[in-house]
Length: 464
Image 1 (cartoon, rainbow, N blue to C red):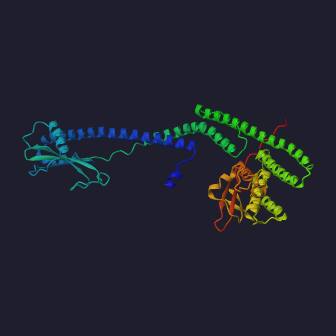
Image 2 (cartoon, helix red, strand yellow):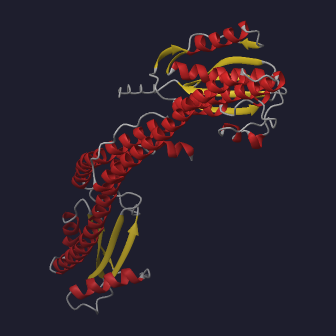
């Protein structure tokens, strides 16, 4: 079943060409078959009539020939598909079928009034005729022969055997006409499919770019009315979504920047608090607010503002692991050959570092490796912690969701790290997967980046 489905073309243009070609070929074949069958019925009716008339004429001629010359005359009248025999009137008659009896009645109506001489018989036979030596190309297993017995004079009768010649071959002209029609229809179908498929292809490319977080290109509003209206609706939608996202990003960024000023003022004012215990608590709360503000600003920057470039993903991940190892963090790097990737390097660095730091914070250890997958690279980060329950593995990607119920930055974080990782992965056309390890306790994070197609660089922002 699957092999048959793979034979069916997957593009709209090729499907349209195949459907039109099949429809024309089948319709031409049906018309050719209809005319062929109709012509065959007409030819058969005409052929039977000529057979009966020829038998009538020959039997009439035999009555005027001397008896001793009748056999020679019958032999002289034979042809490739006709055989004649003059014989004494037979006493044993073979019963006729309704069709044979009908033909016998038609032949008898054509003869002069000789009912007293004996009955007229017609028998239809298929295949080789017994007692006749005929060429193989004349008589084949399904060849029809008609054997007509007509009385000549009293005590003598003429047996005329007609071997129906093989029918003409399938009309070559109709086959050529069908192939020509298919060719013309395929060209027309290709033109129509191109007019339909090109805008739809551009629409699909723009939708994929939007899904990756890129600035969607304008879809050309061309083609048939339905396709053009779809392109217009998509352009309107992407414009609205872009304005909404930019507005939200600017608002979030403005809030984060505006929070920095009062935080700085509060930090200065806390220095004048005389109670050391109160001052320490206030400073601790202020540090949490500072970290949260920086996380909000990082999320506001999200996956925007950076241009893509070609990097060595293996070297980037190795440098992250080396930096954390220098800080005394338990990080292991498995090593990997060069892995070229077109990406926004700063975003990828931030995503990988978040995953490694999470593994150290919650799993006590980070084991990092780079896996080659067909068409993609997978950055795998494993730890030896308790893992994440299946029901929470999607929820942890939501903003400000922390499975640590203490809400403490030292144990629960800000709740924006995995949200940012997911946004960066999807902005590169990839994905992030979380699963518990099979070989022991711990969580496995799989950050997947496609190798091709390379993401388009973001346009530079204009200075206001």
